[in-house]
Length: 530
Ligand code: BGC
Image 1 (cartoon, rainbow, N blue to C red):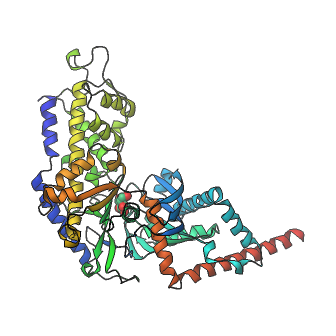
Image 2: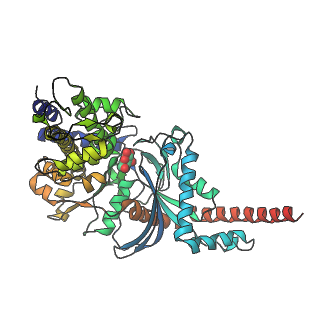
Image 3: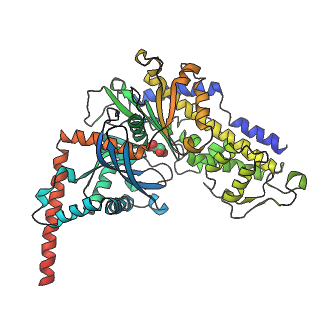
């Protein structure tokens, strides 16, 4: 068999036809409904206790932190009340060792420390005033509500929410694995570490990045109606949408505002169809899953999101390399290679390491329209230490990479289509001819060429949407969901607190810590002067 023929047969296995898309949408709708009826289903359909989307007039200064993948981000956001905002933010890489730490405390102590650094650096006045108040015996009573920053905590992992700032971790995804944290309230874990550092911060809201994306898109680009869906296609993938409360049949424990009759639902669609009723399953998908930290889980995510696409490509490339019947990345003779160079794969090439292929190479492949595929060949050289790949080798890699990317985009369309259909907004007479806004974020939608175009093309063949419906679905890049979106939810939460005991509690806690500290300081002084 020639390399071209072998490549063709692989590409064929990644085909996801119009018929597959329609079957996928039907099954997605079925699993959405199942998730609204009961707990423990593959599409978790988690109620977020957020009961409305903003309209752009919200105002105030809030903090937001974001843990969702490789980085931890801390920001403060000033909402200006006219759809605009000012944001200050710092980002640090989460040390790999902390992603798989023994105890939750190790990770959350690191996060709290970053919050302190941020406050010292960007809000020094506020921070020092707080420390002064804390160190003076007379002033603790002087604490006022506005001295405490309300913070939205974007935590982009599956969490069973019990309230707007309360939720237990169901499972880790995206390479994190700290068993000690599973089943614990992640807001409390962070608040405890913040309190140990005596910071003037209350974790007011727990936010999934998709919920933040939905809120930010509604705030920043509002039509007469907010966005219907916020979605992430990045390292992981997920979506959150606005559901009618009447459709949420499973029991909910926390309190929420009943007046809107709606609630934002975090679908956790990364685990759509874990049972593989309709998802495609090539031999490379099987191997990837088997070798992952969570076999059998996040099966949709493993076919769609950035963390996995590079790995699928890597597994295909390894199989091609092992195939004795084809010439691939080998220097047989000058007819299959450049005249003055020798194809060579470095021994320590990351192609031989699990997760060694960054999905960015798929973007390079998709965007390379040069006649000799020189961009891709340079990419192979720079990032995978595959030196002097022949044109034919690059062509094979491009074909496979494009097929993996196209399948991912068409699968992405399945989720978007199902949610648009579920909301009924396309056929709502009040919205006749109006755009249906979908806010998206993440490396794939930002950097993979034509990802959104491929999604649109697939939407147009979905029963019940068609070309006309697809033209109304406006997929726009959302503004900073984990910053602005989280701040907006912290604002909603602060409003909810006013009507509950919550705000009194946090002030009470701060006052008693301050008193204890001040007393300890006096004791220390005595001890040193004795
Ligand atoms: C997580 C989701 C998150 C998504 C995008 C998934 O792995 O389970 O909670 O929204 O990644 O970051």
